[in-house]
Image 1 (cartoon, rainbow, N blue to C red):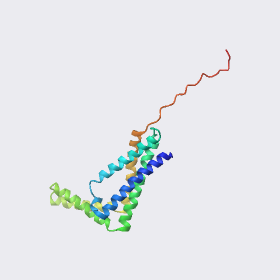
Image 2: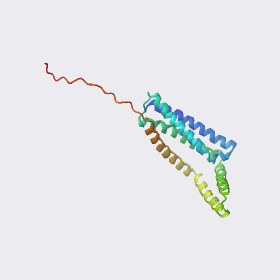
Image 3: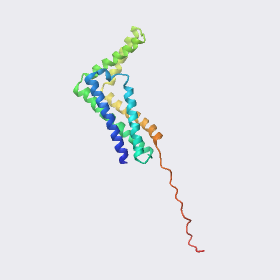
Image 4: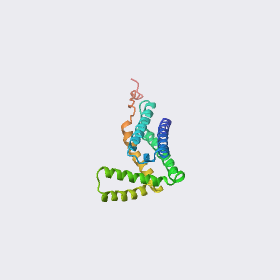
Length: 189
């Protein structure tokens, strides 16, 4: 593997992993509602931007050219580092440090769904259905097997993004045309 690809993937994956870890630790210490905030998509956009910067910096370091494979690899190395680091930290928080945390996150998620339904003026019967459905979904999401499935889906989703980004950022050097001299037929004129 190209060392520039590995270096940029690890560098930006490490940066994103640190941001993710700090976010989850701050959410745990300061305000657990940050685990279920709908604004987490802003973090994901930030991660995407940082991974794209990693690909562009790898291309720049390679003289302005990068193959599809190298662009894909740079993105995926960074994404995998973040996915695995986040999985380890959240697993430690959920199952070792504070085993009651998943239950509190589930309650926060249900409360968020209820608040949203009430803001739209949902009738009490519909809110009861939302609570029941949210409890089922939250219980499923917090299990270790579900966490592993989340990792798998995240890897697949990032692979799809990596394919798109690699196709967009690949740039191969122009073919070098070497003029060959006429073949010597061995005949003297």
